[in-house]
Amino acid sequence: MALAGAVALVAALAVWGAGAAQREAAAVEAAFAQLERARAIDAAFNRYLLRETERRLSGEIGPGESHEAAALRGALLAFRRAVEAEMGRANPAAREARRPDLVNAVGLFDLFERVETVSMLDRARGDRAGPEAARQFLALIASDRDRTFRALIAATVERERAAAEAAFARLAALRERLALAGSGIAVVVLGAAALFARALQQSLLRPIVGLSAAAEAFGAGARGARAPADLTGEFATLGAQFDAMAARIDSEQARLEAEVAARTAELEAANGELRRIDAQRRRFFAAVSHELRTPITVLLGEAQVALRGEPTQDDLRAALDRIAASGGYLRRRLDDLLNLARSEDGALTIARAPCDLGEAARAAVEAATAYAAAQEVALDVDVAGPAPLIGDAEALRQAALALIDNAVKLSPPGGRVRVTVAADDRRAILRVVDAGPGFAEGEAAAAFEAYAQGAAGRRAGGAGLGLAVVRWIAAQHQGVASAMNGPEGGAVVTLSLPRAGAAAQEETPA
Image 1 (tube, one colour):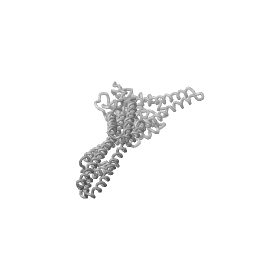
Image 2 (cartoon, helix red, strand yellow; image 1 turned 60 degrees about the vertical axis):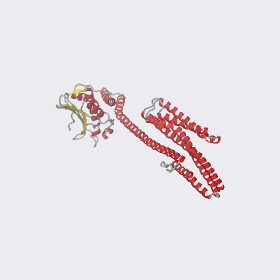
Image 3 (tube, rainbow, N blue to C red; image 1 turned 45 degrees about the horizontal axis):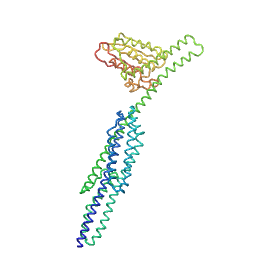
Image 4 (cartoon, helix red, strand yellow; image 1 turned 60 degrees about the horizontal axis):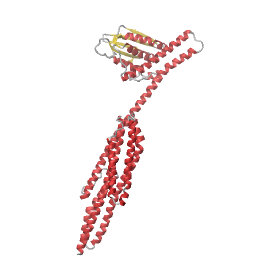
């Protein structure tokens, strides 16, 4: 009877211990489920912020809600309802302990609604697109709320982890109580108590310790930590849920890290391009300002000289000639700038009509004579004969004038600029030879790029506009422009265009 009573007591103790362990395991499972929901909300919030940033970068703006925002809202509602359901099933003391979780759930949902409302108003403005808008969104809209949101998530995760650890602690305490009770009963039936303790240890303690160790390692950052593989019963289900949660969190974290790295690289590339464009803009305006300052200074200086004392009629005419020359040069540089801008956006067009390259060269020399005289540079023009073309006579005159202006600017006082026009059966060729320093190594190949300047051009106050316009006009006439150093010094710039009736574009002769 004593043995039977002891066995019955052992059985009752086992039934009670199994029930208590099952309840605590259910509590651990619920805590892990809430922990998974909290981490899913954190991941969904990251996706939402990335999507809002991407919408501003790509220009997909508008008041419409994104799929990521809807998914985050759904996750927050599910989290709050799960907390409310658990509170509804709990006793009064447990319900009161879970109240902070409900407050956090409500706070997370309200905070997201405020972020989405502000973001929707920001998108609805219509001009909030591009890297700057994305930075402003991250800096002004998301940053403070992001910290608050993550603080609430962290608090929720910590509470759920604490709940799981508390459940594990209760299981450990249960183990101690069962061990003490078993020791007492072991006095009567030592063998039965030993078998019972061994079975209890195998069925309860080892899975709990394994799950606890896996959860602790995963929480400490070991993303590969998983539940023991030999769990059985409810512990096997709990272990499978833990493994699935850990795998989802690991995969989502890796994906988010990759997305953040990619978006960061895109932003850095966009910022680098903006810095490059801004540096180019600064160099261009500095060069234009430098080139335009010289003729403006001449204009003002000649006017002031003419206004002093009692100048003679010849003095006034000479001053007016120099003012007209500087004004003409200034107007031509402004025309170069305007035509270059129009050519780049396709607004500038070229006429197609019979014309002569020699006539265009003579007109350009006549227009540049006053400017050359003001610079104390002589102009020579030699047109060997007719050079008929099909093209735009005014554009060809402007190209020749840009080449002559550039040659005069680079020639020293007392120098001479030679302009020659020749033609054969296939092409008409304009050459401008100056008495300047010529091109340094590597400069001739890039001379026709927009805003490109050699060392001599920078010293003379150039902006790199004229030769870029020449290249564009040559291309519009199916011709080419080239530059090289002359055998006797100075630069030789050549414009080679197909004659009227020529079938194909010709390369510039050496």
